[in-house]
Image (cartoon, rainbow, N blue to C red; front, side, top):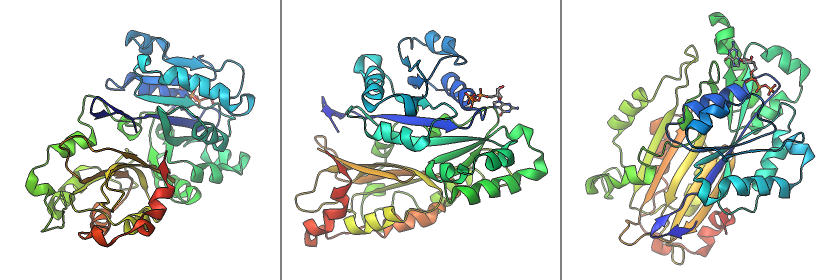
Length: 367
Ligand SMILES: Nc1nc2c(ncn2[C@@H]2O[C@H](COP(=O)(O)OP(=O)(O)OP(=O)(O)O)[C@@H](O)[C@H]2O)c(=O)[nH]1
């Protein structure tokens, strides 16, 4: 991570929106473009046929779109072409917060992920694969595309769209089928692609996690009591209730967030054991970690989306607390259990730890 004038510059997440023909990818993208709460979205599509360009130009986002224009993103181009397009969107002058790639219905999501991961642009990072599924056509899509299960498991988030076309009594069964086929990939339902944009990116006018945590009182951050826990179990319970319903009979997109903060260092092996075995339904983790291990006392920012995981090492800002601050987002996750699992990773005496204990973390550190 680059540090500019004492502030860390975030990388621009690149989110891929995939799905079979007519599932609602463009509808979802248009919804994001008109409900982005100030987030500047760069768009990479095959063609702009039905994108609401007006919505973008009105907001002064001219030139934040690039089009391939010559066929399917994943099979017609090489890495350098995609890199060039990402470079154009990610250049600082464009001021883009998130890049969304709308993959054509026939694009292979696996190839799309590879293209993004292979990008050599230091300003972008993989932000996840969203697979849009047509709720009303699910069974026929499944019979026409035997690889649907693979696609769902590869995704970081499955959006079951067109729920308005589904009879109420069939919803729970459909969700159960999608979940079973997706093998643990979080599932959210929508109609007309009306996904909560916060699932894909953070609104800039709201405090970022680090700033939100920055407002915590010393008592909340201090070790002891609940071992550095920033939230009491009562708070957790309250948040859990407020965060939304995950009852399958409700087709709105309820998800939970877990905030974890501690000035007590985290044990690298214990944290990796938690990350290797992430709770089913955990969709994203963001924030940073303090290990306090000799030679590795820097700030390790952590980013996970679905199965993807990476750390990046940076310097602490002058006067910044050495602390771990994480936000985890998931569907149907047990907020208190996740918080407890992270609390169990705390290590008050990191002086006894060595390079060996850091090895697995280091394999995920991006240069
Ligand atoms: N009833 C209903 N129609 C929808 C919904 N979402 C999208 N549609 C309609 O479904 C059709 C296909 O939607 P698109 O957003 O173009 O789908 P797409 O995945 O981008 O399609 P391709 O680019 O052809 O792969 C359009 O006529 C949309 O208006 C929904 O939730 N409910």
